[in-house]
Amino acid sequence: MPGPYPGVVVRVHSESCLDTERDQANMESVRRMVSAGMKSLTGAGSDHDAWTRFIAPHDVVGIKVNCSGAPRICSAPEVVGAIVENLTAIGVPANQIYIYERFANQLQTVPYAKFVPPGVTIWAAEESRGTILGYDPHTYVECNFFGEEDTRSNLVRLVADKLTKIINVPNAKEHQAAGVTGCLKNIAYGDFSNVARSHQYEKTNTYSFIGTLASVEPVRSRVVLNIMDALRGVWHQGPFNRDPRFRFYPKQLLIGTDPVAIDHTELDLIEAKRKAEGAVSLWDRSRSHLGDNRDPNMNHFIREPGHIEYASRLGLGIYDSSKIHLREIEL
Amino acid sequence: MLLVAAALPLLFWDAGPSTAPALRDAHIERIAVPAAQEAAWKGVAGIVVQAADVGRLRKLAVPSVEYRPDQASASRAPWIQSNGWEFVRAPGAHFYYDAPGKAAGLAAAEAFSYGADALIHTDAAGLQYFAEMLAFLRGIERLDLPPLVDIAFQDDGGDTAGEVLNLMLRNNLLVRAAAAPDPKAKLNVRLGSAQFPLETAQDPAAMAHLVRSALGDDHRSIRIYGTQVVLARVTAGGGRLRLALLNYDGARRKVDGLHVRALGRFPKHTGAVAGGAAQIDDYSLDDQATEFTLPELKTFAVIDLSR
Image (cartoon, rainbow over all chains, first blue to last red; front, top):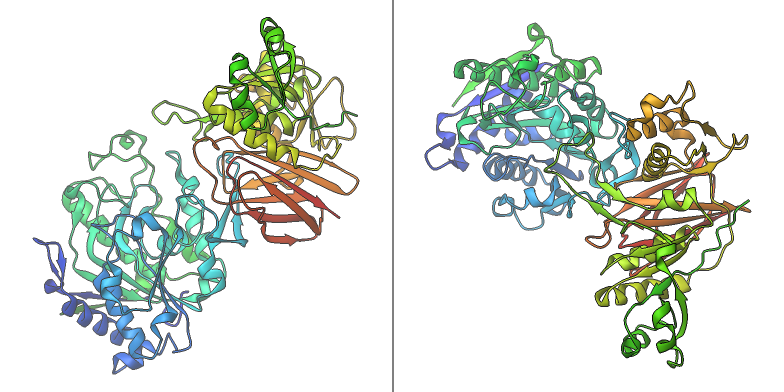
């Protein structure tokens, strides 16, 4: 990260990609969105050429999904299925593809297996919640936020030991502590243990921790592609989605290699939605807005959307709007 | 210097001799009984009996973890009911647990870890757990090693000092109660000093954190990662280091993996895990420390490291 296309974000919108009444994605429409986005990003004339810019048949590929709002809001199995189709089409054997997430109890609520061929592994770092056995004891970030005794956040073993490439598939969601959760947070808090400690209290440490984790090797060099699933989105009470009032349907994918540029685009998307709903800005830091977040003007934390700009200062991508090249595709 | 003799705890049994078969089935060969029952138990085959007046003993808490998520607190850390501070404060005292059910096993392990002279009373349900732990403890090699100490705490015997001592031990700080400063300790702590003011000690958790900060995590002889409910009792000497690891939530659930960092390079290790396999993973040494993962801890484990 930021990969070969810093500052480039391809936004593919398709009105037909999602039946919002039935909450059902259209597989064929999603396929076309992925294809158009990948070709636009790379300038390639075919899907094969586009995907082989990033992945080779010998790679062991991890698809980092996000299931924290599952089953309603998650990396849609249709999007993941379309990605796996492209991987197998360029010659990556199914048994070299891993769909992974930290928590098994969330991952198991999403029917990924129905959308991918036999042989693809669906893997969680924590089969039982809290276990450290799915993490590499030798790769960690150590810091003490609030006097917690366990000061280490360890990297997922699968990433440390096995994967050669990672495709990051986050969702477009507001996050009560981080402001939004997108590419950076999905790859950071989704690849390391013991991260909830950064947001135990109203004032959190998400501002610097997200970018710090995302910049750790081998995470940084193995994430070669970000495909943000914004078919569905959450504009309040994220990253979960317990209240349907706060769900919305952007019906788009954001594709690129630069997680900062994509997350800035996502931030603008969710901020605009909040504004349209009459909710306070994601940038609001007033303590008077701390409280019961059933009211969209209230929140449990002081949000830190500045974590995206902070990550840019670690070299993870382009934050400056004037330098972000947003390519819009309408299907 | 006090050596930890690792005495085996003794069952305090207040039921009558008619329960002797249950004790024999559990392979319990020695018990303490109320003085009023001593005569009745004399002559019962296979069981050695001694009288005890538990009213004269220091009563301990039931080792456990209390979760109170519905109550306001200054910390999200689970509340561990540990008796380590009692043993450290009064190492020569005589103690008594009333530990029903599964807690009887953990009580036995806790007393063993600190080399404490303790009687453990339990109920019929706890007999099995006590007996299983006793059998496990009998198989542990006796090592008369002194406690490993990072912090000498000048204990005035008061309630505030007691709670600070408790919270330091609950945070896996290796501390001993001292009457005077100890030049060999990495850190000396006296409540009321400029560095450790009494006002801060009114919040014992804050004082424990202050002590931890003053020592510095890099200088701590032991760190435990991956769990909030496991406390370590550490003894060391002669190139050996023994970790007694207690899962205070063991009556409820096992810990699926914990990681240990011990200062010092110890190329060799052996382990014994109560109720499980003595498996140690990810064993590694760096310039300053030894690290390893214990993949499962039900209630109690003893890990010996050596050069």
